[in-house]
Image (cartoon, rainbow, N blue to C red; front, side, top):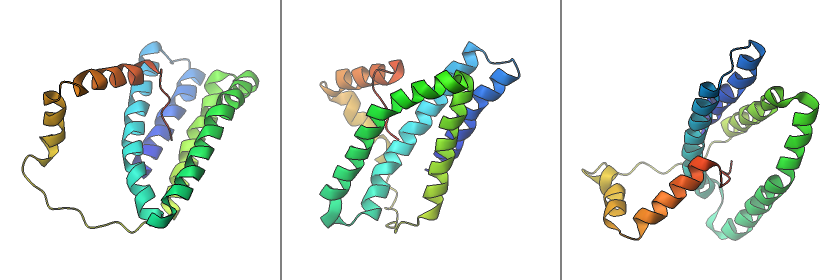
Length: 160
């Protein structure tokens, strides 16, 4: 999670830097968006595991309520605050604020030390088992295709 946050910080900060130097182009924007999205997926996969290792099982419902409440507030207030920031700081430079949010996240993550269970033993075919199931499940292929389309078009919001 630290690596993904630091990577997203560097990628997001590269946009205003390239703009300031006059070298920002559409290809960089597309590649940066793809890389940030990829790192966000990795972050979100780890997020669930971290939650389980930090929150006691008896507090899952309360913890989930707090997480979803803060997420809802961010999804509601975030775009409005982002619009104000873009209006006052201009779009490329407003991305510095977003970049620093990733840096702050990394600093906060660095401060925690979750108790991680030992890794499970490696088994042959373990990595491809899920992919094989997806390919063979006739209902899951269209669902996977729809989710991939939504994620690639920006129609669904990724959570942090």
